[in-house]
Image (cartoon, rainbow, N blue to C red; front, side):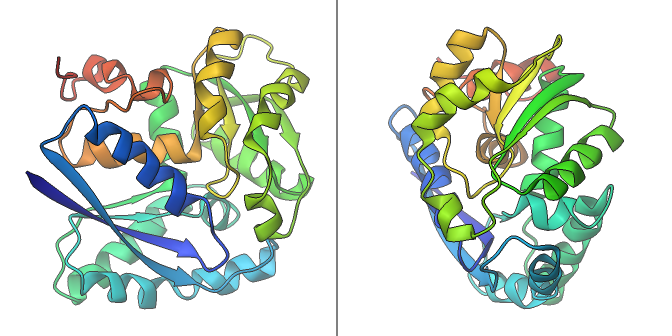
Length: 261
């Protein structure tokens, strides 16, 4: 058996990423019994999703990355999409470089991914030139996320903001409600739906049902992060019942490792 140690940098109030990502990769272990994923988290203080608290949280990145380096992870994921996207276009590149530098200073060679960068990568690998997004954020923050995605060359045809600023309240949202929320989107030839553009808003149980009904790929910040972690580790990107993105076929079509039988 091969153990993969996954380091996660998460907001202190995050309850969901440490649930959905392990759940996906544990589900994968049921069909890839030779693999085991072990998670290690470092937290950065943040309770409310406001620009001020997001900037304060980002200032803790080096400390969090240095703590994770001591566990010698195989990969590190920065798991707060809006904290990065709210800082302006392409900031995920800056954030990933900062984390990488902190890891190297602490003698860790782990590659780094971010939920923000992973969402863009996953959308591009899906061939999605137009997306519609659902967020839990207040409308101004949702607009920042939409602007960030559009700067990467992907058109955002519509957005839905649930307007929940308390980060713990976001974690308590019922993912089943997303099976109705997506209907409020005007899809206008959208190639994909981002059902949760936030790692804190639960959505995993609704990804596959909404995808089946909408007839186009459905992804989330969490499924995109899982996809990018697996691909970066050189593994096939298959997770059962997690949508087309994690069928193993998307990365294989792009030249990544094909899904195993």
